[in-house]
Amino acid sequence: DQVLKQLDERIRDEERALEESKAITENKKDLNSERASDEIRKVEASEKANQDALQKLAEQMSDVMKDALRNKEILHDTMNEWSKIHETMEQKASPEMQNAQQQMAQASQGSQQREQQMKQAQEHQQNALNALREAANKMQTTNENLFARNFYNRLRHAASSESGISDGLKR
Image 1 (cartoon, helix red, strand yellow):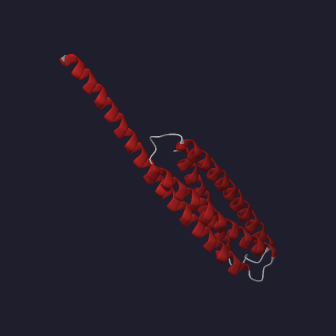
Image 2 (cartoon, rainbow, N blue to C red):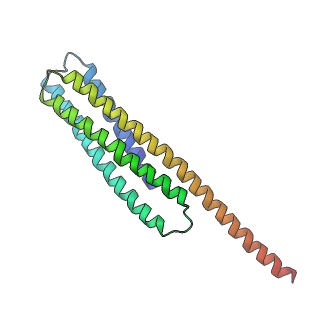
Image 3 (spheres, one colour):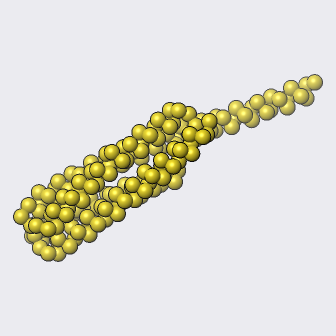
């Protein structure tokens, strides 16, 4: 659940950065100004911070998966899903965030192709955002299934305990 909350924060931060870069690009009269360069650098820094936080989240998820391997009640399917989610974050979202940073770094340094570079950065940001949303949706479904399985196991255990009590009373 904690990982899902942090992933939601990463999604919100990525949405915010994407909106900021769109606003910079849409302001065509100031696009080639020094002020726009400063704003691009701020968005680039925000993108870098979000990528770093995503990397820490991926590491945290790796630790959770290691701990889960010791728990016999967590199904193999759940572990596979977590592994896919981890892979989505590390191999889809993170590289896209890095590509967006690179495009923004280039856009902040030179003003000749700034609009095109910012549009490419936005494309990378959108791809990262899509990957993060995909990971969050998979994680939500996996968590719901895990909670349902846990609830089922508890009910089954309670039923067997009740059955044992009932059998003891019949004797």
